[in-house]
Length: 282
Image 1 (cartoon, rainbow, N blue to C red):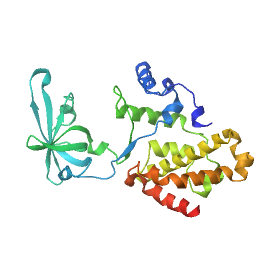
Image 2: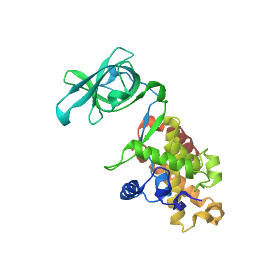
Image 3: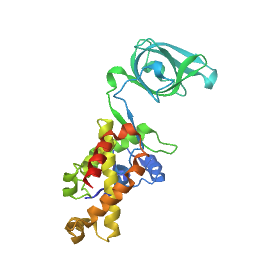
C-alpha cells in the first residue's frame, strides 16, 4: 500500500480525541496517510551539547545544569516562577516560567537537569522564557523533528501523534521509486524514509531521507507526465527503456543547486555526498 492510500481517519491514532481531530483537520490532516506524510520543516539535534556561555552565538542551548534556587516576581495572577540554574562550566542563567508554576515542584533546588532553548541577555542576566526542561537521567540524546504548526497544538503534541502513527501504521508502506533505482543509488525504501524523517537517529540520516523524498517527487512528476499509473510504472515500456529515469535524472541534475539552498547545509551532509555521486553518474 502506498502512503497516499492509507485513508484511515486520524481519530484512529492512539491519543487523538475529538478535539484534537478537529485541530488536525484545520491543518489539512484528516487521514493517517496525511499524518505520516506531514514532513518536518527542521530538526533539533539534541545529541550535541552547547554550554550557556555560547548563548550569543548559538541558535539553541542544549546543556546539563543544576537547579540552584527558585524565585518569584510579579503579583497575583501575574506572579511568575523563575528557576535559577548553573551549568557544568559554572555559568548561571534564569528560566522564566510563564504559566508554568508547577515546575517548582518538579525541579526543586539541587536537581540535575537537561535544558534546551533560546537564551538572551536581559535585565542583567542570561535568561530564557522559551525552553524545554527534563531531569538529566530521563532525557535521552536524540534528534527531534520540528513541524510547521498553527495555534492550538504544540510540538510535543504533534510529535507524539506522529510517533504513534508511525508505530501503528508505518509497516508495509510501498515505495514509489522502483527497486532498481533504489538499489542503484542506495536510497532507502518509503517505509524507511517515513521512519528516518520522523524518528531520525542522526541529522545525517534525516538529510538522507530528505534527499530520497526529493528524488521520489521528481520521479513522480515524470510518471504523471507520461500518464502512467504507479502500479504499472516499473512494467511500462517507457520505464524499461529508461525514458522516465533519464528524464528524472536530467531534471534533477538541472535543479539540484536550486534545491539545496532551501535546506541547512548541516542537515544535508549525507545528501551532498549523494548528489556528487549522482551528478558524476549523469
